[in-house]
Image 1: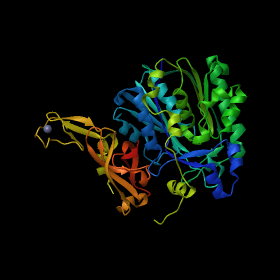
Image 2: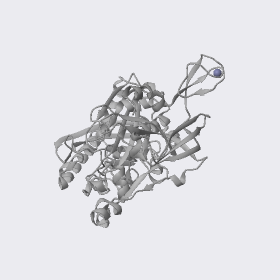
Image 3: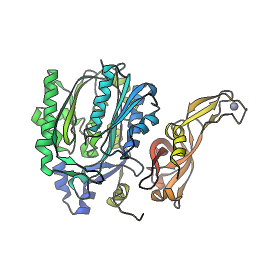
Image 4: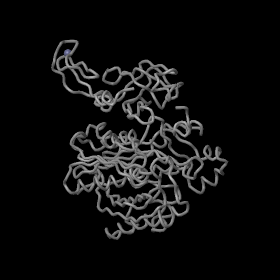
Length: 348
Length: 130
Ligand SMILES: [Zn+2]
């Protein structure tokens, strides 16, 4: 039996409200807020990036797993904002945790799906018996082009999961992957901001792949929506998870617990993994959980989990995701946000 | 600016707060020492710094060394950690008016500096309010 041994989250304390961004671009804030079901988003401090957030989330996962970092055999970070073009993020993470040198490390990239990819591979190596523990992290400090619809949602955060076979807090019953080549969102080399296909990002992209993965994994496991206490879908905005949930036959109550996007924004590779941490924070033994990520390009990974008796022992061992999200916030004005995100061109 | 090799040598301390302690008198050293300066003992055991503490003193740097110009103004403090070790570092994610002697802080992993637009990124510890 394999599953999650420890999990952890990290969200920077800075926030910017939709109104503050809309004001600068002369956009209609109420229509954005309603259209995206989004109120504010997280913003990293200038000294934070995918690596620093991955380290903090992983330290929280270690607090819950209570294992020796030297027993971690694989460290994977999924992100579309790795700080280096060439040089791994994972080596810094493995070194900071003290998991070196006997550890396999790789950086994953697949738009917003990179986090669950790292989780998928770490879990697979644990299941095969190649390693005792594996760490999978989803982290991003994503940027939308100024004034683009993405600027209202592109946020920062990280979630980390340690997989193993002993002392697990959530067993993983099933995994499934669903993907096709779909150019709905991309960023070419040396380009600072991504491009997207507008409405094309909806039906043939997000909805097709999330539904494909959810239906596929439920069929494989012989389960249906009513079997799950919680479901987490990728959250590019507030509306999409509820809409796809309704299409699949899930109720609002199953989605709400892991739905963080209205106050967090889209944390890309961290999005559905952070939703899972919020669910694990309050899950009871026996609760069944469906997680479906989505990454443009395009594809979805799906996992079916079941919380074990140990879940309640570890929930308070590190900061809970909702409390990180709600406490100690600092609101930025657009100027400060633009400085933090290096959107202002300075003299060399 | 640290060269990659100097930065690399300090990774165990910058990333993992690796210290050591004298086996005979128990004093903790950061960075680790070969010989205890108090009792001359050569037997020291690996240890780690506590990750929480209180601000002993602080200042706000407005005219920093050139590699930190982008970050100015910023706060630097001496923090007494829970294990008694006094450590100097930047205090971030804290408005200057909220800085106080005795304020509880914890250590977080942050980017310390970067060598221009093309050099290495240097990571390490900073203090943030609890
Ligand atoms: Zn001594």
